[in-house]
Amino acid sequence: MKNISIAFQGERGAFSEEAALKYFVDDNIETVPYEAFKDVMRAVDDRKANYGVLPVENSQEGNIDEACDLLLDFDLCIVAEIKLRIVHCLIGHAGAEIQDIKKVYSHPQGLRQCRNFLNRYDWDRIPAYNTAGSVRMISKRNDKTEAAIASERAAAIYQMKILKEGIENDIHNYTRFFALSRPGMRSLTSSEEEKRAMKSSIVFATDHVPGALYDCLGELAMRDINMTKLESRPSRDKNWEYVFFVDFEGSLEEEKCRSAIDEIKKKASFLKILGSYPAAEDFEAKP
Image 1 (cartoon, rainbow, N blue to C red):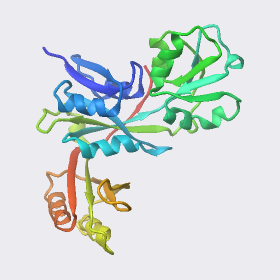
Image 2 (cartoon, rainbow, N blue to C red):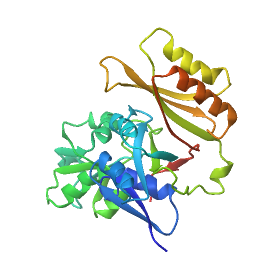
Image 3 (tube, rainbow, N blue to C red):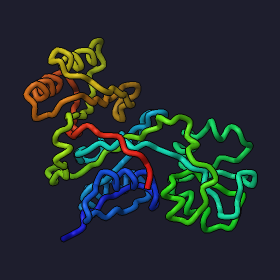
Image 4 (cartoon, rainbow, N blue to C red):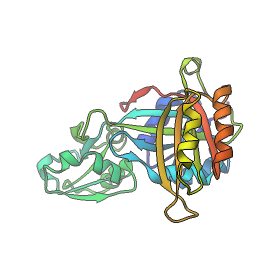
């Protein structure tokens, strides 16, 4: 049987790969690393991968703007959301101790999510393109003054030492990921997922007039549809105007949700349906 390929951003051991492995549990899954978020989307769009997994929001640091913007650029559908508990580790060489460290590398999100711990030390904080990639990078250099912030799994993959586990600012540190596919792709929804409540995501823009956003969101409220997220991003077409990302409870197969979308379309200057998918359960980022 042919492998199902899952594209993710970063290196082996990245949290995006963990999210993919936690969600896609089929024996025929193959995870494939790509350097950039756009590369992940393009791999799915070009049929080099069956699915892509992107982080879109962190519970402490908010939206991951680049990933959200890419949802507008590609004609891909959200087929699942994954919520992963992010446990950050300070990772160094086998012979290193915390007192040896002078430089710490990680993705900017990783550095921000661990700022409270890092503020205790006078270390240089150096952004890298990926958490696991920073571990891989320092593993190639025999410099015990260098450390990285990444997952326990990344430390194991690159045979590095965990100097301290659980250094994130808050124990309620979760990242939300979307699994994306081309329109019409077979869903991997399990029988357990079919029992879960559904969510849907859309993005739209309105004319720059008073009450336009209120009128659109009112179509959800009057049908007793619960909106779970509203986020604005700058429009690429007009300065100082915005597009709105909305998540709400329910499936677009439900009549009341379809009706709401039909009415929003009439009032919006632009609307794109991103997908309907089972509401996520929370996973721990552990091997």
